[in-house]
Image 1: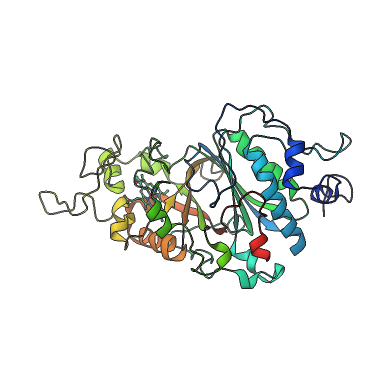
Image 2: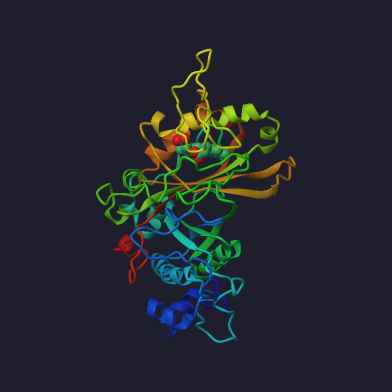
Length: 406
Ligand code: HEM
């Protein structure tokens, strides 16, 4: 174990200190929130926050490899589940030692409002291999997404044992949360990959305007929202009878870093761009409509009998009506990671995140269709891919990971 003091890990100190990590002790130590002006999203609830929560503007998505023991892992999950509600309230990690040790909170969010921070935890398929005795707990549908045509995946930054999706209206608040949760895991986890996302590309609430992605198009018009209760029950929330009872009320997260060829896209005439998507760029309306939320008419034909929404357009191929009703809850972000050092092209695109009840039957089926026939995919290269089981939410007093290890 590495630590802040020789031979002493940060997590070990927290675990063995006279100040234990019970929720009550932390609440006492945490003091008052910094500022009560911005919104807070409760961490506790029957489902994890950060799924149907109206999408915040910024993302920090971290994946981890577990390097500690089963006990270390169990202890860390418990710690994360105790600290997460404190961070969501905009409070610092409480001090557990004096100033001769490194501060327990790294400090960069001091004075910032809670900013709607949500922390969503997930377990990757590899967590259920032989290392931690969890193989009998693996849900059957929790399998790596098959490699799709056109993928150029980096194995070093794909997949992972654990993930934390941190979303907030302030990027520093999201980064601070991930950084401090990572420090609490010293000796138990190491960061595998970190993706910063900025500018949401999905709408999960009818009260939010639809944002634009880096193609310049409104993205998220026809997405599931938090008020689509029946569709969420059918397509997003796992039923306890589906497979592993511990996943009841949970969902599966698929994350794909989809690099966009922005240079090629920018050289397409506007009408060609609109044919690729199947919507008008300015209004977001389908090519058969006039306003953004008009329902696309996939049967409508032009004067020569051609479909007005082209056969290979993105919204036709992705639409539930052409996919046995398959819905996903999309919750992606733009990413802009500078320039590709070899080509000088933008290293930018869409960090696609979606939630579903069955990642194989939903995401993999849809993405396979898109990869084979969607005109948009000429401009898209997947560079990372990962899937995680997000357990149900915790009620106050419950412990993250308890059902998994029971
Ligand atoms: C970089 C890649 C992608 C871009 C830029 C992109 C962009 C868009 C845009 C602009 C829309 C229309 C507005 C809307 O309804 O949200 C849309 C719709 C949609 N996209 Fe994507 N998308 C990408 C990849 C994907 C992938 C990989 C999937 C799933 C496997 C997907 C699933 C959907 C679905 C389900 C819709 C709604 C279709 C409908 O019912 O009208 N997209 N996307």
